[in-house]
Length: 69
Image (cartoon, rainbow, N blue to C red; front, side):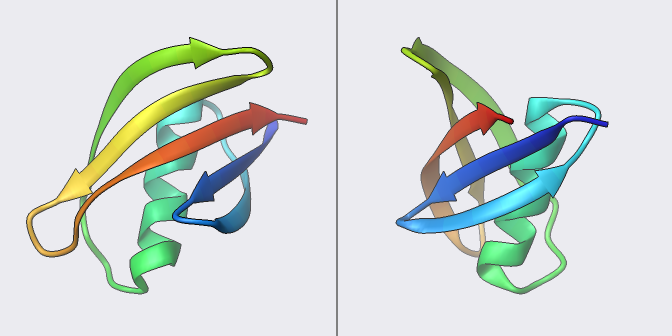
């Protein structure tokens, strides 16, 4: 499984996952420290990274910067 580094609101998470979107969901759950089911939306590609928007009604939305190691 690939290892992804996800940055959400300045906090960095390292997640092993089969895909980027699943890694973003897992990082968001760690970020808010609650068992939520966030919605993940692709925003754009950036040099060396992919930007997603991740949100839930309880905790709002964040941009997530994802790189693969």
